[in-house]
Image (cartoon, rainbow, N blue to C red; front, top):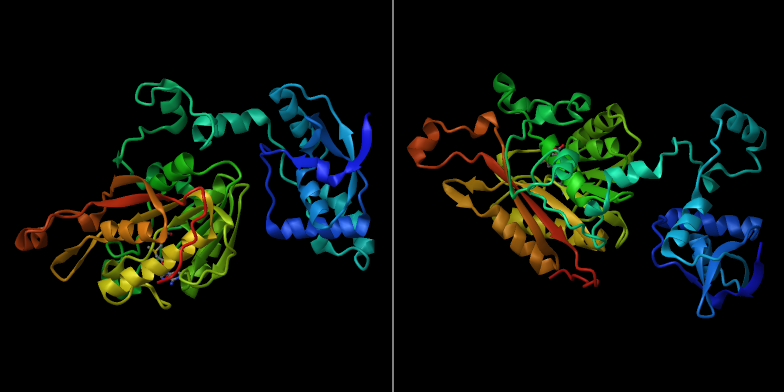
Length: 414
Ligand SMILES: C[S@@+](CC[C@H](N)C(=O)[O-])C[C@H]1O[C@@H](n2cnc3c(N)ncnc32)[C@H](O)[C@@H]1O
């Protein structure tokens, strides 16, 4: 082994490192280094007199913040990109697994000396790299390699995604969702006791959500769902292995979210928060993905202090406040996906999706995509009311996909 002590200023992080760390875990790492000291070298390759870290990028950042001057590095000969990736994978490879009972018995006698919150352990089943590549291949990894593929005709693509990705989505029968059997039905709206089926609170279509996850989420994305409602998105994201935060300002919906997420199997994890999406409790640039199905004005009434109650102008103001917060907590370059419908204020059709796009663009988002979904809902079928008022029956909703620009433009509230 070629181990050397070098000035920390000569050592750099590997720009392509596919691992990330949450702020709280980074603080834990620093605390551990302070208590236990540095006991293993970083793994680096040499390039133009500098050292680039393939193993220990988080530790390097922590050591720099802790003002260490010199560090030990183990120098490896990684001449090709593939070799660099192999060293990085090998350094983080998990071969051993914890035996939970034995671990608990080992630690238990020392609870006075070991602060349990200082350490996290990984007890999930390790999975083969091939599973990641097959599930989230290059065509899903944004900003990276876009394969030369004919999306219309390529059979592999069709099988993998199971749908043709046009900008009009039809046949979204919710029972066809992979996760359908694990979802809890939204509660009947007590206001409409005699017609509970028709007036159930609506939920975002689970097939649409599965498509959204496959198209715009990336492996390891840390997500946020403001206006979580019945946690349809958060539950499904849990099923697909994502970690995230769900928030709603109505305690009834929060309890429902907890039950819905608990019932859903999957390796992901979702924390549920009672809070106001117009004044989000999260830090700037924290999330890799946001999904929001905001309150629909007069289409549906919620308890709590819903941002959907009141006039159309009030709704627009509230949506502006929510999108401002979404912009703030989202990392640059990442997606914020909105599911919404237009609605009528008395006889006048409000251009809800158009106004929503305008207000989001003013905040700094770019409109990245727009999908129209056919929603075969009972309440949206053509009826005598429509005939009399000469209104078409709206049987669609919109998926608006926004992206925060790469370079961070800080939005300011007007
Ligand atoms: C359309 S529902 C969401 C349904 C959800 N997408 C689902 O399918 O499970 C809108 C939700 O927004 C919530 N909401 C309204 N105003 C809010 C606010 N200011 N902060 C957080 N949530 C809010 C409502 O309580 C309601 O649960």
